Length: 266
Image 1: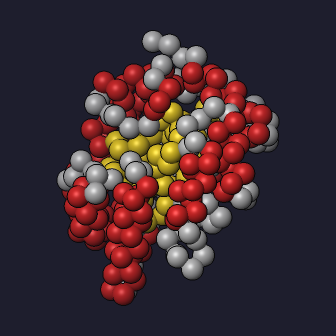
Image 2: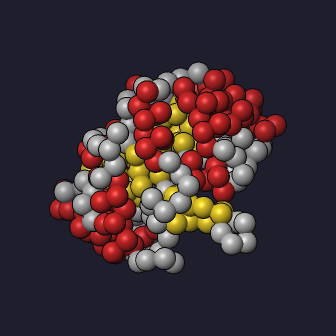
């Protein structure tokens, strides 16, 4: 197992100071993080956030930033030209920060997520993807459910219409299963457009509803995900997203996830 390609999302620690989140991540064994794109972990607003301080904290804890979990693109489906222009500026600034920090990818949002807005948002994402490509930064919208990101055919349609290797899907098998979509079937539909990947686990509970589990205790075949992404030519990271603090606190549970991933073999 190539442990150099694993990272950990700071989202589960979004209510903790960034210094603590990076420390907990490093103590669990990780060398990379998928940084949540909200305060106190990240902001493009220089009045409330210091990118140089982020860089210094990363060095302090021996952590690289692999992905910025931002929400760029939300306003591309707006009826306001001013809002769209501001979204373009904000997205390009985020790409600049990613390039400055050596970040491979950023998370984006497909506008308001409605199918009927795909053609409206495509030109703006084309512009952003062209700019991101010039900075060697990938853009990926996460499988969070909804008419676009939870619909494999719509994911493929949007990605194909933007038409850039630097734009595509943040593949999230567990989220797809939560939404009632088979993650393997989804992969077959949009695998050529995947720019980033989140990994967690889950299984149907006693009530039949899909719920999170510790890594390796659910039905997500992590080895299948890694193997098939590699065979599809994916060269990015695999970000473990610990969202089961109700089962075990992240301070101790995250290390168990790292060890489980490290011990996977093919």
